[in-house]
Image 1: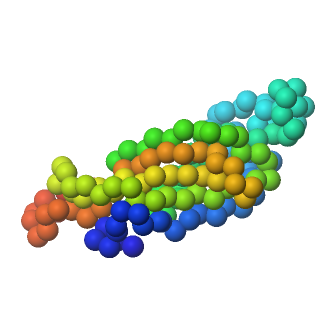
Image 2: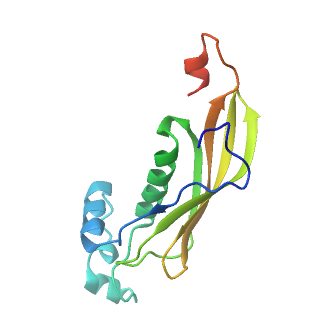
Length: 150
């Protein structure tokens, strides 16, 4: 789907992820530097009143980044805002989705605003947000095309 084909209301192809595993949580803790024990230690999670360990909010945000960059190159991402609405328990299967809520022209490019959601198989919404992504440059055939399209 290119910027010229995109319309308000269009849904981007969803990203269906594998179940969140304890290994994924440990690897993300190591890579991100977030070693909060509720994400990797069952006793710590239970001590905090949880049934099991759960995913870092930033892991959910990383999944949203992966979802967006599967559709548009990273250099076209202009803004990303998210709000975590629920935890992602271990073994949950997140699905990232996005719907085009606006398309606007400005600053020499077309931009799409994408309403973002991450939901689990049981219907729980764990993240909502919004991203702005540059689509096609407004000007074509000029020596500045490379700069305008970034």
